[in-house]
Length: 106
Image 1 (tube, helix red, strand yellow):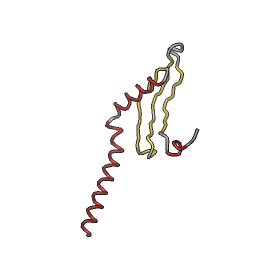
Image 2: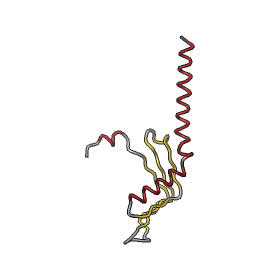
Image 3: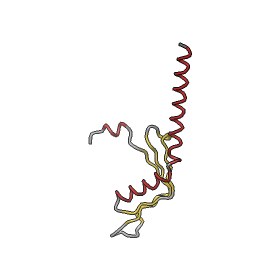
Image 4: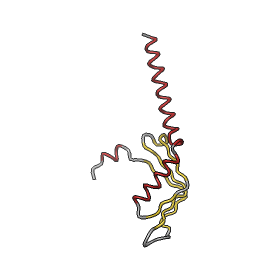
């Protein structure tokens, strides 16, 4: 009985450590793909050209929400405001909605 309980605790601990390690490592391994996808989606959704130099993604910083920080973020207008800088920010961050935001009735 003791041996079985010991094995359960051991495997539970190992699983927990692996999950935490994945939460920390995934944003670093896929940073390039995530940056490209974020730029693509922002440019597709907005009637402007969005650009940023770097993105910092964390699944731990504001757990359980995803935290995203953009560095040297700028939004440049397209026709009829082509070439005009609409927004220029050195750094900014946001995080995903939490469960309270999802339950609100608008």
